[in-house]
Length: 558
Image (cartoon, rainbow, N blue to C red; front, side, top):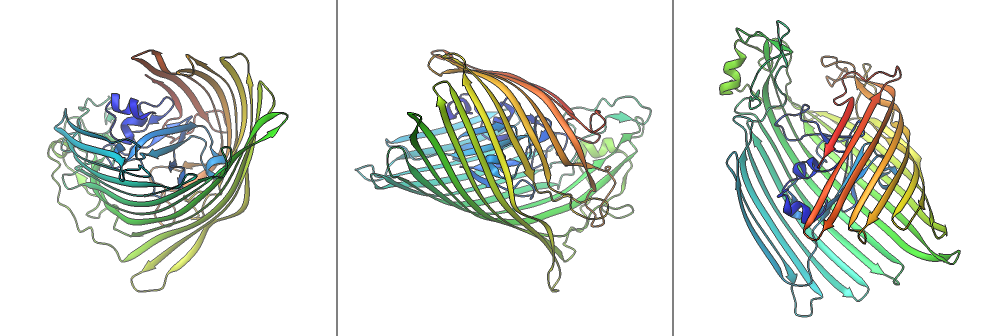
């Protein structure tokens, strides 16, 4: 997804961008109007996010980048399917890499004012260029602010973002850059759930799509501060090393109350209950990613090699708050849910912390290598592997008492292999086949309170790709099959583990599907982008899994 396309379509946040990506399916049923949307690809939830290639952990809440404003970013790259070679860990859905803006060699400045439906008002500014006359030091500063309501009644969103980066040519072969990024997101009046589909008589509800099941005081807030440094050095035209270091501080504060009902009485509006609680937390990340990339001669042809070392420490801390249970002020019957939907009026109970604090600490290190070999002119062989260590510790603390620690997952020397073969059929068309391994530690628990074993499996893919008009127009088609072990499936909406979290079981699953996509320039001034994805997720009995959000997906995109 290029910068030009995001500008042309006025896509200003990541949710809007991903709506336009073929094969990515928004799941607005899991958190309607909340702080996050949730996305699916090839039948599985998308949990793999990167910023400039630096990995965010998929299993820890608060590290996702799904609410970011795009003012700081130039483009995004989406890899559909498993990406264990890039991330070491990763579900078999997709990886979303958000790439930051860089300074420019010539001066440029852009100011934008925007207004739209539901009282949307946005201002943004973006200035870049050389900071000294020689141009060896360059900078960029971008900022945006936005307020808007939505099609959901009583919902109000605020966004603020500021981004700055300085880049310097230390020598003719060495480039150093450093920057900082701050983002803040608030969604007031948001709900954590939708509205019932049926009345108690079995007929379908006819509620307006603007119906808000949340209280007026519900609020989803996030803010994050990222600082980063990047050093790149070219030894020769063919060999270079790049080191990225990043520190992230983020927090979230989410208090919500909403009406939940499996079905409601058509005449009286009875049958719903309040679900009220609060989630707050702080997360920190320290990461370093070092890559060596180069080319060498073999078989009288240029071959490519990439080696990467990655280390990260992810930490989270979250106070515990009262949660709904029958007979408490956090879960009470609603006499008339129609009045609740219309006004959002409900007294806010005490949402002070219980005194308990929970946290996570993950240390991970990975070494990976990729070799791209051309034994003959029209054939490319891609071989790679990644070796990952993953150590996840959970802790809890009650008041001033000492911490209680438990190990959630410890994996050492996990090998994630990858193999691919590409054959150039003509000057325009290529065919490929690939195999990828999947490994993903999990943080959900079973009925006994034990953590599920890591998600593991394999992905097989066949496809063709074509490039026309000097690469400006691209066409692709692919079929894929994935086999997974220990895939987490909820035991039921009201079934919990001993600590109160929802209980899961691990199952074997299989996903099959195909994808078609076209994108690029047809003629000067004419761009096209579109495609179609079909994916079906099945359990061991060859039936769609229960309690999955999107068991079968058909996703056109244009």
